[in-house]
Image 1 (cartoon, rainbow, N blue to C red):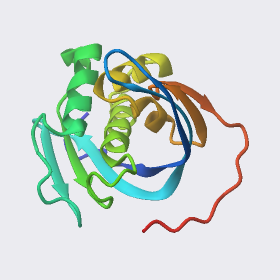
Image 2: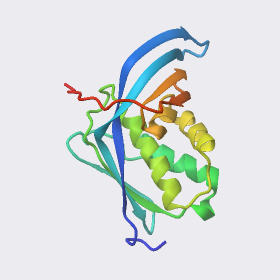
Image 3: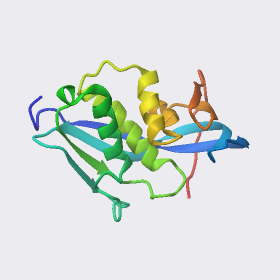
Length: 177
């Protein structure tokens, strides 16, 4: 892969919990849930391309104050996938995050960003990694990452790690305020 030859854009959609039921709490503090979650056609966007060295930048309406180092879930996702696959198979990349979702707004923006990074990098690097392994990496970064990796209507249980995609779900018109 030559730098500048292959820019790919990935949507990191907002996650909306249409129903969320807390069913208990684990000893480690995580809540056990049952959630009906859907994903919008709106969200943040990631541009990923080969580069001479790793780069990460953020722009957009809600970019101010976001960390540009390993305090950002996108960088953590890149590094976790690289550790899993090996440095030889994961050359440097430039990642640009267009932040369209408000930070800490409850729509899973950071988790969706990290999930888009995992999906996008696995494809760009042509990794032979299955969904279960990708979900395991995602779960190490956040409880709702496995559902964000799917980005389809689903029911989530456990701490959000037990994901059951719905085979059919009607399109909904929603207004987020």
